[in-house]
Image (tube, rainbow, N blue to C red; front, side, top):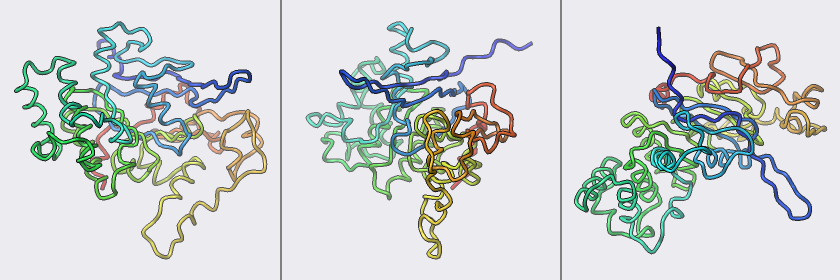
Length: 349
């Protein structure tokens, strides 16, 4: 007999988020709609959450971090709802689920040297007993991430490069011994020459330290370099999810095809954007059907009448498109059931 199955490390159960604006006339904007997936306790994984601006990526990140509350659904950490956590549980969650933001400069107080952002969390969580131990932890962590303490400590944020500032924030997260890191567009404001360094750093956290990474991005190229699995969001709904190799190399949803086709190819004979010409705007839009119907060249009447469910088109693939209605409908919207075991991305260049 086997014992009871351990609760997932981090779990989103059918979470939705609707923002309401306006004073006299209320306007409702659905930023995320019934999204479910889990981050397993083991093995540590890297999951990309991709989509264009306004797709719901950052809203999902903020929900998972507990910075905002879902309109519907539940977020759990180690089986405990974030909404019902006591102070001790909330404190543990704050330490074990860390974030790396898009703009490293905005994460700093310009009046403090970078030492402050590194030593304060150690004091806050009691991870060092004295100043010498703090410095030892800081120096060791910086060196592990390729930063020299003598070139980093004692300086103000503006005296460091963008890549250095971002790696300092990675070091800050690592020192707290997290189980999950939510990286929200961590390389979008970094020079192209430094992106590979930051991506390799995230892979190191995953492989060497057993930290699961949720990599939020609009860049499918970097997602493909680092992740095992991917969720593609469009206007708050998951369009496609599963093994990143299959999703990027053989996209099924018309929106995913559009994103992949927008990636510049190193071929002088292939005009940029030529692969996207098959996707054109439909003459009909709908508020009740598929939210991509107004941009889809294969939209059918059924697409305008009702939103498509997630179809399991492969053991490691789920696609929200009526083109695949011959495939079984996923009984649960838990997208992690379509994910592959972690580790395959390490072999990908």
